[in-house]
Length: 248
Length: 248
Image (cartoon, rainbow over all chains, first blue to last red; front, side, top):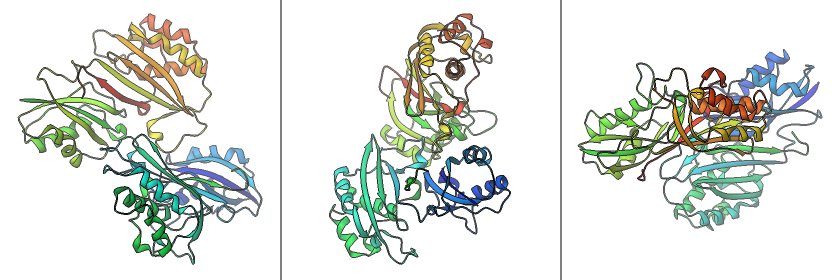
């Protein structure tokens, strides 16, 4: 059996998330349908993690096993020819049989974008949270710094999380402005359920002056989801990159 | 009667163009419907020009007359509250009764974007023409320079044009790369039917080596549409700005 790792991008607007669900269109279903057509096998794919309904990706990774002899460099174009337009395969490489898109992942990077303009920029507004009320950029940057390092992120995790523990390490977290668009970029060894969206929602509190920057740290320490801000809407979030010890 | 000038942006993906048509959803219809609701008058709007089905705008301008006493600064928010998400009003100003969005326009700027990546960048692909085949950037820049100045643009005008003459002045034309995205930006005193898209289609011929840069000039001089390249697809085109002697 060959093990193939694939980097995929998708526009999450019209998906009920990445992972197969009882109802709704999912990225996984669309990809498996096409892979089964190409490999003539009952192929399952395994992603680095699920993304929620409405969340986008420019660098999601999955792997699958196949006996098909299709040349690996043909896989992206073969899939893209059949896939719907909101999924684009970027690369495919043959990997060791022990490679697992989730278990082998070293780092993930998410990006959340807000549009701070009085009115939303119409082109691509479906990829940005519109926040026209005034925000304190520097206070948000200051608050954000407290999430870097190893922490128990329970306060910034959905109460619907099924994970036993929420300790994760954040390697880098930055807030940058590109004109009226502000990008939050967070890189860590893993993320709990709704973690980036809850951090964003709490940072907005800081930006609005409802909380002080240091409160990001205080909330973190209390391990209580009810203290953090609202979960920011899914459509501003992009899974930007998943890093491994090999190049995908 | 007050005369109100309005700057509007729209995502053209789901419109059958700007102007009212016998069939299909149009930007004009959507705006007039909302204006009539707000002014309680049978309001017609007059734009700087129509845009074709699929073409976007970040700076279209229209004007309308009204007896309504609504404060002008309230107009954008009042309209945006009701308008569909793919139309966003940016500004509204009260103007002299002689102001006409089309006749008073001094300059227009259009932007056409191509994505030269092997596979399309999925987020916002609906706003870019994907052109994965290799293109000669410098040759395209060189060819583009020939359209600057006053010319008869018949060769770069749809044969369905109903205009008596096609002489227009281009003040500036540039091709710039933003990574894999290449932006064509053209500013002129006016544009004939499909002019920017036909220039883009012909520039792609130059980029592919099917034509030499100087051919842009030769084709221009012949005043024969059949000599120019194909009309590039509408979805890569944005009406970026319409300039007047006042600030809209």
